[in-house]
Each structure stands twice: as C-alpha cells, then as structure tokens.
Image (tube, helix red, strand yellow):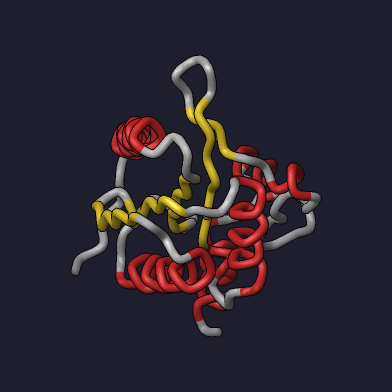
Length: 169
C-alpha cells in the first residue's frame, strides 16, 4: 500500500460523508448508542499501514469493551473509520470509550466519539467533560490538543516523532 497525502477538500468531504452516515445510523437505531471510531494521524497522510493497525486495535478494543450489536468498518483513502451500535447508554459508553483512549497503548491515536442527534439534523459528540474527564491533551505539551491542532503549534517533525514513540509501544 502506497500512502498518499489527501487534500483539504478530500478531508472535508470525508467528514461530511461520515456525518451523513452517522445521521442515518442514529435514525435507524434511535433506542441505541452510536460510537464512531477514527484514527488520529497528524499530517496529510491519513491512510497507511500504521492507521490500519491502530484502527484494527481500536475495533478490537471496542468489541471487547462494549460488545457491539452492529458494526461498520471503512478503510478509506481519507482514513480508517468505524461505526458501532451498542446497548449501553450514552454516558456509560462514553466512559468506556474514554477508558480505551486513555489506557490502550495506542489509544492516544484513537478518537472514539459517542454521538447523539441534535434537533437541527446535526450530530453532536458527547464531551469528555460530560463524564467528568478533562479534555484530551496535546501529544507534545500539556495544552488542550484542540488548541495546538488549530494553531499548528508544533512542527510536523515533532508530531511525527511523538507518533513514532506511541506506535513503538
């Protein structure tokens, strides 16, 4: 498999497609809980051997921890993603998803969202703070990860070194 960089247009289209599928799944399973797993890789390459390994490890962890009633796994050029329908209530599922993210050796590279439908045809993730946990921290410093990502605080080389260190575990 030859990894290739994706454009911002491709990334945004994948995000829109993922949100559309999430809306469909929430509508089809209104009494159940929806989880969405994506792999967090800094940089423009979102699908390579590493992302597949992390994605497969995430799927295995979700299966073991939450025993999905339904799952859908997508290996796309824009990145690995998976959807799960589980019987646990949303807050319990969020606590378990955070436990995977916080304790799995590669959990820092997994984004496991627990989703709920908004009244305006949107999908909203339940925050870590809703279950009493702090926001995720940056791979390189103690600031919230979201801040560093938006401001591009760290160099691609530093992020790659952090990624390599996590994957060596």
